[in-house]
Amino acid sequence: ALEGRETANFEFPLMTKAGVRIYVLLNATTRRDDQGNVIGVVGIGQDITGRRAQEREYTRLIDTANAPIFGVDTEGLVNVWNQCAMRLVGYCTNEVMGHSLVKEFITDDYKTAVQAVLDRALQGAETENFEFPLITKSGMHIEVLLNATARRDEQGCIIGVVGIGQDITARLAQENEYTKLIDTANAPIFGVDTQGKVNVWNQCAMQLVGYSSEDVMGKHLVQEFITDEYKAAVQSVLDQALCGEETANFEFPLITKGGVRLYVLLNATTRRNDRGNIIGMVGIGQDITGRLAQEREYSRLINTANAPIFGVDTQGRVNVWNQCAMRLVGYSADEVMGCSLVQEFITDDFKIAVQTVLDRALRGEETENFDFPLITKGGSRIEILLNATTRRDEQGNIIGVVGIGQDITARLAQERGYSKLIDST
Image (cartoon, rainbow, N blue to C red; front, side):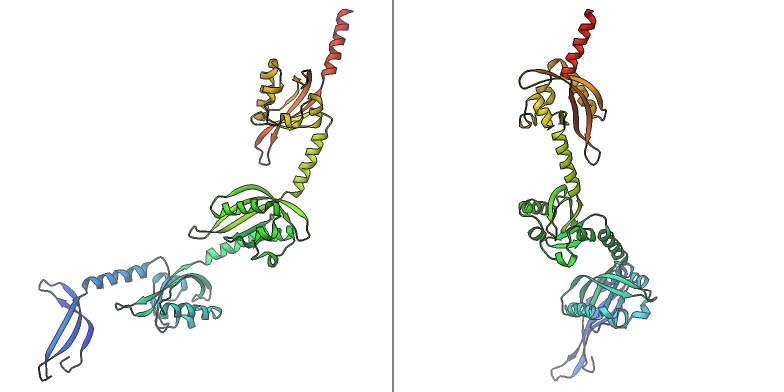
């Protein structure tokens, strides 16, 4: 400065009168008289003791952080490399400092992409959640999820990039395993994004519906693959899942590539990303076409059986009433459905006994050959021999009782006639 060369931002320590060491950031300026002759130096300082302590703390935190953190300067040369990066990649600080991150540690197929991320950060455009591979010292590939942040000096000038990473190698392996399980699962699995466009379509769905992944990916599930009468209902299920409300056991039809109508039982599950944000819906289905056909066949057999068959739900309300029961009692299905069997069709003297039989069946205790009377629509009393069977859903939960009966009115009358004859001889 006494030679006229001024100095800016020179750091040096000063000792206080009490012996404490403080750090000063100095601007040294040449002092001149009226004739321009150098007559001394003026130093304008700033106490940076606290700032240096804070910087050391930040450096320590970065170095000991439980995440790989690295930095490069404006030339892409490594100037930050913390302990976690060291353990993860295998290179110590001395082996990487001053080396080009992209040219020496990134796989060839990602060099351009990683360089583009660094270049954007050096222009002030930061990047989040960028996935790329790193090559370890032993030659292994590890996958890193990176947040690239511009690094600035005190004047706000960009002086490099700091990358905070996360080792997602194991997570990606797990995701690949999940993807494999989904793709090879013995159930149709499909998924849609938040716009309702297909982004998951496993092999079972492919075999079932006939469309390949290429046929469906990016297409709108509801608009292109759901029958018109079910479009609104299926869209509602998707919308609920996209709002976090999942749906179980929803039945709907799908049209195959060959034009065949099949029925699917669907569980619609909300799909979320790592931060818990909803990103779509995954549906796990079951082809119930055959089961529905079988149920319809069973319903037809029950309805046309040559024996009165009726059923009640867990509240004792009629939900099965076949043609034989209709002819026998005189009430149509419309007249009895939803009515209490015991309260409306059983004589007062048998209400308690019949209710007991139903209650036992609703606990899983079935009853055979139980005699009880029914009152017909015409007011006649008929005698029924009943087998009461517990009715269960697919999960084994009790959902009601089915009674298979036999009209024994004539037989009982005949038995009473025989008894009367025997008694009078």
